[in-house]
Length: 481
Image (cartoon, rainbow, N blue to C red; front, side, top):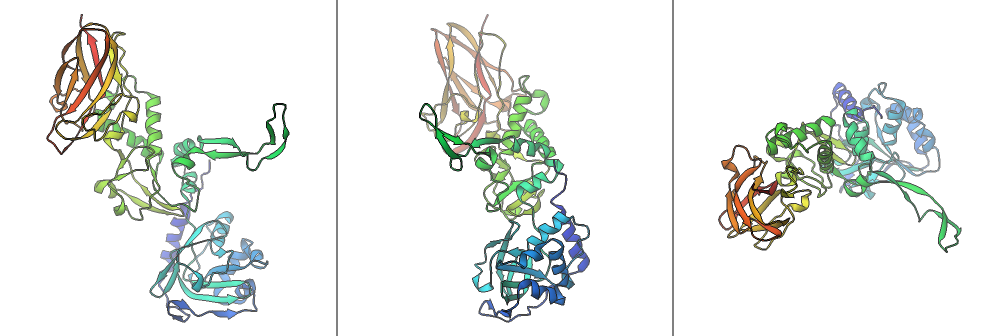
């Protein structure tokens, strides 16, 4: 596990700029009709020009220290974003690897004059993207203002900028760089698998069955990157809620307290498997493919369709701490809340072999907007639009003749909308708000006249058009003695 913190770039950079007390300078190059007028020496290479410019000696020293002066001396066509000596910070606290990453962030394998820039992004030679944007006085690259543009040289162009730019970590680099994300990183890497790369494998013959034989090439693919978010990919942009190990634990505690009151009320069958299921659903939820540059831009619920919907809201936004990434933005929070109808816990009742039960085992049991003819195999939290009594049905297994007591359980202490349970030809009103203990509530007795499956109908009680939600963990029939 790496321990170097990629956020060190940001922390060190803030201290450096505070010490320098930087202020914006006026442009040193003519700027007319939205474009700079080129200047320079078309017979001089970039490396030669930088080496004799007193204003850029510190930056050129960094290029020499990191070996990029040799890159500039080659046959490449380059763009260089060069900060002047008077704004160049002390880099003595940075490692050789960090210095090389910083230097490479200022170079592009292309000749990019201002007239050619489309004010979007360009890729630096270290793989990071630089964001180009136009300003009233010229243009900006990332956070750096361009003070002197289009210095035309034989093998490319130099743009003078007002600061040394610090490369940002990608979402994956951020997770790799801090032990606080150890369990999250372990989970993501557990989705690695080796797959046969047919396209790049060389065919070497045919076997006895006439099937092609390959000199097989295997590649590693990651299921999380494919389905949730390709976090190392610099070409994609994501919004991430930072999933520290403490964050995952606190979010689990929050969910338990909201929907069960406390951990003491959890079913005995709730164990490590269910906790792992919650963590997996949460870690699939913390990455959104939508980009929200500011916390106040976040919607009420954040979702990527792969896990929980996470409640943000005003209270959550006030907790957010923003970290810009090279491929998006990350927000830190102590915990997050999963939307009620996405939170589920499998329940298992083992009181007697004669007890017939319907147990919710997946989100497939969630039903929304049923309109009188819905059908489901179970129900965890159901949200319906009441239109004269919307309902949903599911079946209990075949049951012998006899007298039974109907039991229900509704652990969710937040959703207390009343509904009606119909089974065995009888209906029972159930209002969770009327019960202090929502576990194993007796509704009443029914008679089953012949062996067979029993249909349970759950009907929402409310006026037409009224938005209601109720929760049900199970319905069971207990045979009377």
